[in-house]
Structure formats: structure tokens, C-alpha cells
Figure 1: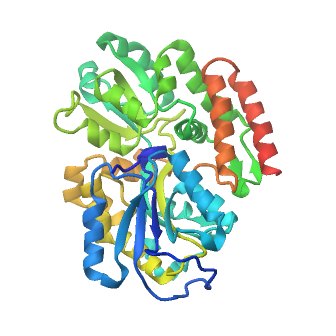
Figure 2: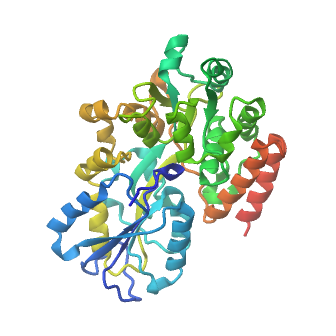
Figure 3: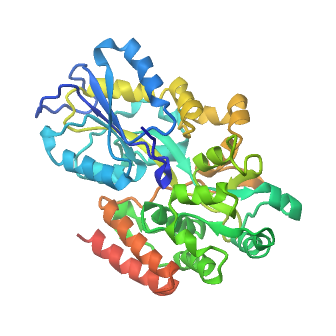
Length: 432
């Protein structure tokens, strides 16, 4: 089994299902407990095999609430489809607890599929502050953050050291280095994830956010994308393809393809999630010991990343909500979160772990990731990462962003007309 890193494949998709489940229409009030029982936990794949040992620890200490693993498809789109199809079954749903991509919380909450959770049951103040926002909808907590993620700029530090230049902090510096330094070493300049899928939505949102813009407001009810910032952000990416410092091959890249291109020594710069740094730095990698990571650049300084990761939510019709909440508390406890990082190489949500000297020695990108997720002070200031556009119709929003931005990147549409079209099509979705 494999863990997904989506939208960073920060996406862990898991579903907790009551073993021997019999459909029940019983519903409980927020925070109530209907008893405890065994659970089945389904995951979209465990890349590093870390989850089994974590659940063995739970099962040893909770013999009446043992968890059995079940696997869903690796594809985020397929997992979303299976979850929503099942949840539409109401009290016939098999799922008790869902570990959902952070951008699904609003959709699932608005549909009434997941129940509000009592804030005082979980130590939210110990989490990185921005991640809690991904678990809320309409001012209420509907999930608990489990894994976080933020896009980083990976770079060949050996190449930049030979040139005597620091890693880029602005788009102009990135563009200049990609145009002038990369060709000297037989490298392509820059890549992200530009295939029309969720990763393109993330890359486009980061460009717009870094320029100071937004896409939607008021939980998806207001369209804000028709702005100079959006034109600047999408224009920056479109210019890269037009001028060639972003290779055409990047139009086919998802996380893995782009990571592999960087790991194989074909790129000077890469936007990706932290897992790509960990894998490319591993023993046997052609670029091991030759790479660094910094926050994403922006027009005038460090830019803004999109938050990735996953949140744990409880099905409205869960038969054992107390067991479900207890499992969530276990998976988000500090000792288990430490293992999520050390065993799974997945970024935890507990803030204290990002300051642990031992962990920083093993995962040197942690301070950079902490800055990208939660912001930093002073000269190193980085704007805190932001969620993807919140909307009860997020799946439709993402498809529109992918289609329109892809047309801009391939030259079928100018950035200006693409932004106007994006505003029109998003308005049609928000008024449904």
C-alpha cells in the first residue's frame, strides 16, 4: 500500500468503517458518545509503510476498538468519487471516519455528510495555526488537521554555489537564473505540476496568492479572481512556457513526474511538496546532497504557498462517534505525529515538532516548511500558506481552474482573457 502525496500528495485518504457494520439511522448530537466498538480504517495507500505500526499500538491498548485496514484507490479523484457516492447513501454509509483532503472539508460539511466537532476535545492550540482553518466551515470545526503540507522551491544548491548566487526570493530572480544559469549546465529552468489535474489548481492558486490576489471569498459565494494580481500570477507562468524557461514537458507533470525530472538531474528549480525533497535527498539519488529548499518566490519577495494535507472527519451517521473521536485524538497526539514524520516523511500538524533539534537534523527542511505554512517574522518574513478556494462545489471549481489556466499556459488564451473567463465560469458555479 502507498500513501498519496496529492495537492500535494500530502493527501492521505483513509476511511474508518465499523467492522461488521449494520446500517443504522441513529444520529447523535455534537460531542455525544453512542458507545465504542471496532473500526475499519481504509487508506488510499501507504508509501512508506508507517501506518501499520501506528495502528498496532492503538490495537494493543484498545482491544475493544481494534482497527482493520482497508484500501481505496490511489487517485484522489477516484477516492473522492467513492467517498461521496457512499456518503450520499445517508444512514446506509459504510464510513465512520474519513481522512479527507483539506479542500474537501467545505464540500462535505455543506452537504451534511460530516458532523461538527467540539473544539475542546482536541488540542487545537498546539497545531500550526493555519491548518486549523482548513478544518472549518461556516465558523464551525468539522474536522481535525492530521497532515499538513506547503509547496517549497527545491533547487540545485551545488549549481548555484558554483555561480555564487543565492536561491531566488523573487520571480524576477527565478526567471533570470532559469534563463541564464540552467542552460550552462544542460538543465531546464523551472517546473511545477502543470498537467490539468488538482496539482495545476494548486500551482495556479499559488501564483495568484503570491501576487496578492485570491480566487473566491465568503466560503465560495463571492468570485474575486478578476484582478491584476491574478493576471500577473497566471501571466508569470504563461510567460515561462512561452519563453522556454519552463519546459513544455512540464505540461505533463504531476508530483511524481516533476520530482523524477528533478531527481534525475534535469531541472535547476522545482516547485513540489516536502516529500520530493526527502526522496531526492535519499541515498542513491543522483542529486543527494546537492539540493536545498526555500519558500516559494513571489513578485517582490517570498510568495505564498497553498496548504496541502488532510483532515480527519466523522461521518454524520457514524455508529461509534466516541471511538471515532478517540482514534482521531490518538492519530493527532504528539507522539504519533512524531512517527507520522519519522516513519512516513509526512509533515505533522503539531507546531512543537518543527522546533525539535533532533528532527531538524534528520529533516533539514522543517524550518523552511514551518515558515511556509505558518509565516515567519522579520527579514525572513513569509506570508502564511492559504487553503485552496473554499467552496461547497470545490470539485467543479477546481475543474474550471484547471481547464482555463491550462489554455493560458499552452497559449490558446491570453492571461487577461483567461482571468475574465475564469471569473465568468466561477460565478456560474457560485450562483447554482
